[in-house]
Length: 185
Picture 1 (tube, rainbow, N blue to C red):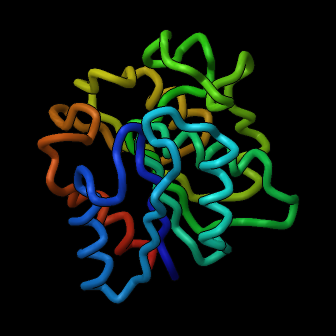
Picture 2 (cartoon, rainbow, N blue to C red):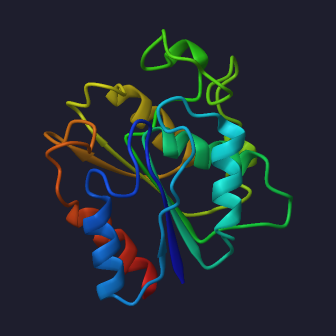
């Protein structure tokens, strides 16, 4: 088994709680790949999906997506060949795929959001185990987006009260480790 973490916009693998997570995976002898996603300040969906593909996810891979990284994971799943699957997908503070629900309307889109949102039917062909983690006090991605994603994916929905956008100030997410550990069994 291996884990791939797609970080969010305006950050890198050394930001937020990502180094803590990488250390926890090392302690568990689980290979963790956290690609440095290009142009994190002005990302393009195709470039981020190429980075995910380079990590070679397969049926024994857990993919985590934080914020915009979660949007990239869902867009990547939409475009997979019919026979390709991953073990588990965990989304943290991931926005709706609808362009009208973009968190900051003035930001460039570059393919992350569309008029029709996500193709959940297509996404669910490539994974059967989804977890959505969202905090009610998220100041960047509305809680309703997490709820919408969880429902449409048939996901386990873990609700938090005070972790905002799982960004600055959040040093560790023990529930995330529990989801990884439960997948090893």
